[in-house]
Image 1 (cartoon, rainbow, N blue to C red):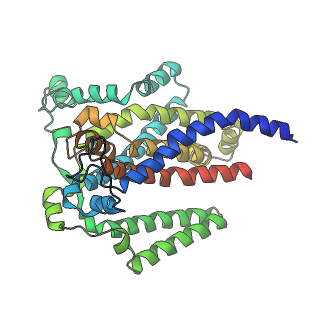
Image 2 (cartoon, rainbow, N blue to C red):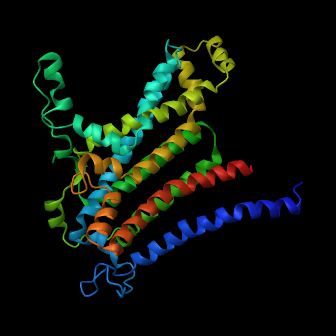
Image 3 (cartoon, helix red, strand yellow):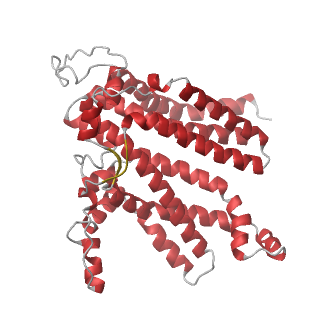
Length: 381
């Protein structure tokens, strides 16, 4: 039993950290939300850096402009780029990291050396990684001329960060329908999984979420959430939406740096599985592939989830790697973090920059909060 004295001591020890956390995190978050609802920097009659600047309350107008105004097309580009970057970055890191961990689990000679080599990129900052890969991905040098140097073949004709190609194109007004279908597909997969595992409680949550998505879509509530563009024809002409090929080099660089991290997590998880489980599977007639598929992989599910959360958090806030590789003015590779910098420190549109930062915070919270909540529930049970 903990005495009241122990509780008081714990509170006193934690109080300075809690106070600093409240001031430098939550107070600043509240300040950013408050400033995002003003016209600070967007009103020509009020210079944003004036000592006596007057900031008028405009409500959600800045957020509406970000989603509908043709002048803010870069923000919608940044959301599209963030989606594709997150998708391929997380998938690439998990795939490469798992492959490296499985190879190292074969007890190869020099495992310590290989493990160090694979982990070394993680020791670099994203700025260093971006600078190195920017040199390597020059259109007239680096990787493009590698086939010519090694084999005498024609050099690769790809512009990397300078590319203007758009793959998987779509129209911005179609995003609600696309998101609905993607969400239902994911929920259908989870429903099949939970049914085969006979986990009925999470299955009920999945069915409830599917019902909510269908209700939102069928009732046309998306029209109130996803506001229509002011001039959709101009939007498609200026900046067609899709996977910008210029992101490919940035994704490769990011996967190169962070796949060692996922390798270390997977390798630790694999080595933590009792050898008796593998031996029992072999005795029952499992091949080595079957051992990994039926014994090892199910034990790695919590690690996969944790790695996805960490990598997703990194990708949503990515700034320095994109800045170092493509610069802040490349519309093909723009991400929300870059827009906070350009809007806030170049254009002095502090209200717009705050609104973009709040949107970033929202997406990070959507990713992190459910994970933390589930972990807290597991610890309590």
